[in-house]
Image 1 (tube, rainbow, N blue to C red):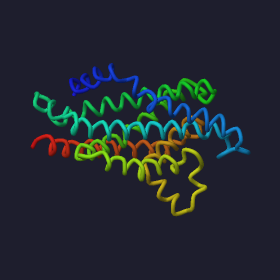
Image 2: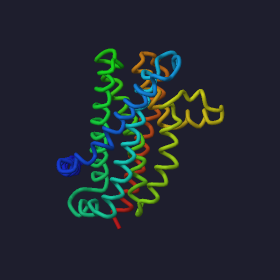
Image 3: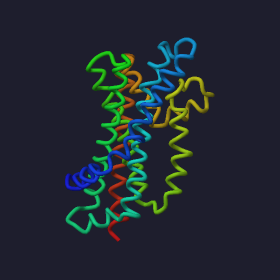
Length: 250
């Protein structure tokens, strides 16, 4: 697993510049433009706090979620398909499980670094009240990305064309990005849509990040969010071990 991770880190040394805009710059521009810019036009508070305080933690979770999908989805499909990196890897002593584990560790590291940059900017805006809040929000955002990454990777390794990935991104990821409490409270949606949003991983991640950032987290809800996201990650790893083995051992 570590050897597989080393490969991705070595490769990233040569390509990191091209991914900075997607994983770091775009979310930060959203924070500045919507949170600080458009947010200044919002009259009154949202859930009892100024709009920027409401928006920033949700945007942090959404960025981690989106970056994880891109890296675990398109990254895995490319490694298995056009580049045939996985096929080369399993020709060595690496097992399919180690190949998957190394790539997922790399995705987790990417999500962590992107979240770290975002939380630093939040701190510069005065949205992080203490070191403990900084650390817990950073870990919550990283978990928000890791949770779907394993499931996405487990599916993406079976995908042979990008249009299917693009379809999922447009019609699954983007609606979650827009309606899971990132830009406005889920409570503003119709009751039926609220129920759907509460069952989706990004709402759990956004609510976890926001409650930790605002100091409103309760033990019960925090445990629920962490358990949901953790269970999703474990399920993805277990399924991925099956799909990676099935695809790579042919």
